[in-house]
Length: 267
Length: 274
Image (cartoon, rainbow over all chains, first blue to last red):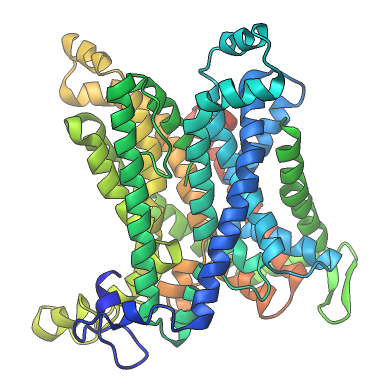
């Protein structure tokens, strides 16, 4: 893919190597519909990540800390959300939207993306929060901290790696989603949808270029967070790994081990 | 605090599923609208028309899952036990291709495997392959694509399970005169089974329900049930039949998971997914 982004193609089909060029990098934004699809993807992914991270973090915390009625139902719901094939999720959402006459577009895509990402954020945060000592929160309360202050100054810093990992996971799931989006998107096109549609008419080299750039950014983020993890461990010896979309953690530190556990269900 | 997330899942996962079930029993068409008539025939029609496609989807899903185990287990084992201090790097290298978007990856395979592409072109023109040889548009290409695309979902759970095994248990087995194979078969393998179990679910379910690989890499004879459902929704607008097919697929997959959980004797399905 990376190679063919440099391919000097003449016709519509980008299958045969025809010489090196940087032309497609210069003309990256020539296809306005492709650019719009990419912008749609990024906007939806950011919005979905924000909503999902907030909802999933609270759900994960609650599941890790409290025993309450309906816990088993919550577990079942999470399992459903993770095990249900995307095709069925998309199809059933479409069935509901059709029944209610809801127009499909960016809002319905957003609703769907939040739906299938919540479970992943929840289990990631829960895996991180389960090992925490509740005494720390109690100490903060004894020192006069209110609920919001306790959350912001005590709980959040402790679960931050889980939250960051969950957020990255939610972002990747949203940006990369094709199946559910194709059912709930209506006329709104995202980057994966555009690429898929282009297979019939010929995929322009710009797609390879954008893919290469997204790939490079992903790798940079992963390497960056892995480095920070190691530095953090050396400096403080706390073993709090910072999150990332894929578990590159070696799982030897206790903190990172719990994270990897959360990722077991990641896709 | 669980409430908002739970409500969201209820509203956009559980309720839509029930709508789909309801829709699957209706009759009508897109123009005049659909009416609830408890039309069970939708299921019978769907199964009799697409029975073969269902079978093919499950078969492809199964093949891809088995191939994934065969590829993933040795890789995960090697990284977990043999890679030493470079574990993180090897895991990262394996996952590297998956930073590229799913659709884009599949399309890229189409470019690589095309008859005049960088791989088959030279092999045929100057090499051993016969003139009519091609890979694209065959079932082989679809299964290969599925295997490739869902491989990480097999590698990661197995790796995590293997990683958790205390190496001292293996040493203890060796001290008690277990051979290499015996130590592996009696200690490592059983301890890693929950990982394999999670991996199988996370590979088999999406692979059987996939339609992208069949669409991009397969030919007209390799359609999977996902392609059919998608076409029923978007091309013929036969929502009730499409809903019936989706629900049948869900039911088959659920039954498969439960039967599998039972026969394997691992703790309950929920337990393994946790």
